[in-house]
Length: 243
Image (cartoon, rainbow, N blue to C red):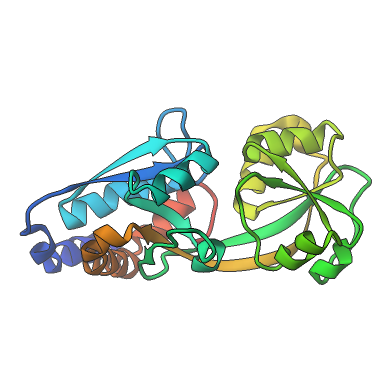
């Protein structure tokens, strides 16, 4: 039934593909299961493939370290970034413009063995050092970091962050819950890490370069088609994640 609904949605969206096809550069970074550089797979790659089918445009993913991706977006060298909450980038030089949301990111604390404690509010982290990915912004913790109440320790990416936690170099990290769960399943010696409390939940969208804002109506329509057909839920479900 869902296949038939999706096919019907594609027919209804045929007008989207009538315009001249364009190529857009999409900034990716290794962020399993959302973006998996090895094999160029993952949830966001499959979403891009679906977007391409519906809109008729080509979306070329380029893998970069996250900090470099942010700089290239500012310079207009990257057109799109998937999975962004507007509040994360509102202080950037070029915040961008945004599609309608397509999914959620839930951030959780993950603890080294024997280090778990209850965290009801960000203030419960007072005096602690929290491991994060360099370049990531967390609105709930911004003031606490700025005042020195909570200390920040950066890693290059989520893989390094999880490895440092497992090696005892950090006591707690803040990370996307889906990424943490996927990592624990993939790496046996992460099994003793403790996934703790949720510290933030965000509706994420596609961040678009202001110079490419004419693309937004097509993106929004395509996302609605994918939601109605169940395509987004199907893609997330393949990786054991909810959108």
